Image (cartoon, rainbow, N blue to C red; front, side):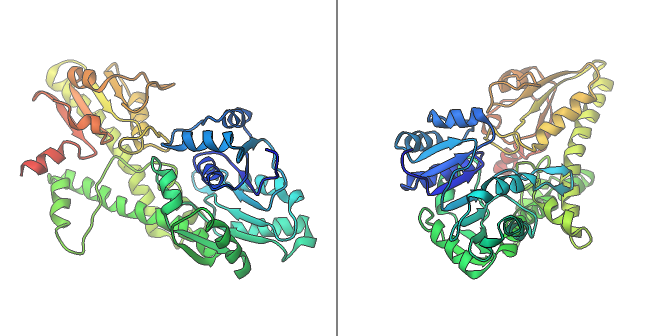
Length: 411
């Protein structure tokens, strides 16, 4: 790279790499760190290992101009950003070992005046724990570093725009750390930067996604009630939303993705007695996926009793939301797995128009599946499914409201 980097970015995944590319785009030298040598080699070749619009051009330019280089180890800099995964040891206990390992890797490099920021989604108090870890190893630096937490809040598929334009919440362990972090982010973010403390910033990230999870759970619970009550839930929600202060979301087959389906557990794990609503919302949204799988199984049995043969069943969609290729924590993928586990010689067509192949599932074109299947289960509202022409003899299970859009337009 020639000159020393100003920024070391630890973690080059869905958030770390776009953030590194954005910082580099602003003429700030970045040294990105990833434990996967293949990821490092890919980035240093000016290419990307994840799917995100506009990211390929940003990385190619940053590498070519010498503002971004990747390595497997951190180097000396003034600003250190931790953007590594925070998975679960089990379903309800967050694992901050990656954050700790990344922090320990840079402790020998830290010097007075440096800025250390965690962006990884973290349990409340993680920033303070890492501060204690750093000062435990380097006591001579106590009170001489700037330590802060700043969570991302971006939407996959629009990350490069939202990284620049979304507001950010920034919380330091003290006021000087907050101010130092604010000055750093001002260099490449146009959105408003909101000051707070580290614990509040950590909680803010968790609360944002927990709030959305609770709202979705209400819609999913309504769909379960309406199924028993023989009411069209999408018509009901459209009518209820005519009220000026009501805004019910749309039900689906569960909740997926790397944030909404995961972040509430960070709160529930630490505050199980207090987070009754948040925990129940997680149960409802997980149950909705199980319920959908059971409905498909029941429909298959009913078809067999009526027609004297096994049905052909199309399972439409694998991604965690419409029109993307991301399958992380996808309820649709869970449903397909659950249905196939209980398969009994039925013929299945698995459809996901946004990916070409899958290592487990054999994929079928949506038109072929819609033509050949007896039962069509819409799991994800992909745009390709909205224009499918279905004959009247098809049994349709619409878990995402894709056919009800036509019904509501006709009314």
